[in-house]
Length: 355
Image 1 (cartoon, rainbow, N blue to C red):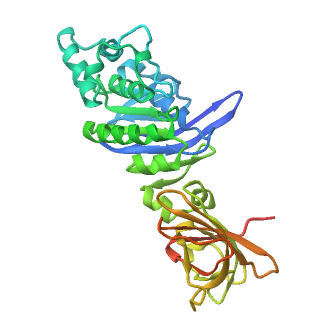
Image 2 (image 1 turned 90 degrees about the vertical axis):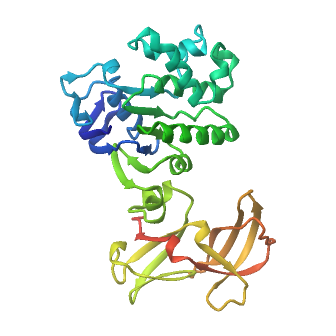
Image 3 (image 1 turned 135 degrees about the vertical axis):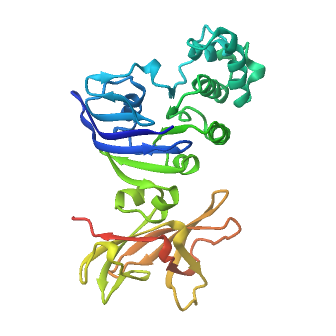
């Protein structure tokens, strides 16, 4: 089944408008991440979908059937929507099995035990059925919450910052486990997160939100490699910012030029800004003819990559500080001289910001 939001707007008296005429659809079996800064409306959209918040404007349909419009709401328990909260909301006085059973009140008693054990088996916790929530780790509690949401076999699953309270190492493992469970479940899933790496790892598509609107919607690779705005480019990962100017069809920067594209939004003679991903900054031997001389300021091994801090002349008597990400085996020392150039596939051109 799919869930569709059409023209959804919402406001709170104390915060003002948080959603602005939003249209979005999550297809059957699709995992879609709502990504964006705090206060952009992500959690509000989940609350509207689940029925925890009355809809003020627009409509929400589930597989073509209306479940919410102003003044007409299907009760939360009748929507077929599962919800995993940020704090998991497990009942401390109930065992793991009893927590999972809480969502099965409308399932015939004879089927409940099988449903409970099947849901716990999906998340690898069937051996903990009689345990209490306080006896579990944070990752295990998150998986119990996921099992409880999946047990009624919802048409749509909603996860609100479900991994935020886990430490970094555990978060990676739990995210990986959860992704496999969701893919096997094959239901439409809407995940709220403010972590761009998490969204790119989990999502089939990302809806990047800003001030109540969807700034860009698409596959993670599309947002990362073809951002339509400066906001998208900077939110999806680190960038180097370089001043530029358009001359003779080229976008000229302190480290070389790029061919101007019609979609760049700047014209001949205008000032521009180039945003370059750190992995798109090529580092070469200082004698390379196609590079610009730079000096190494620092070099740090970060595990999967090596981060190099570089300084190049900005063409105006000052220095431009840039970051490059290299394979982990590469190593440079402070004061080394190198040449740098751009990978055009990792460079994005936007009109210069007003001072």
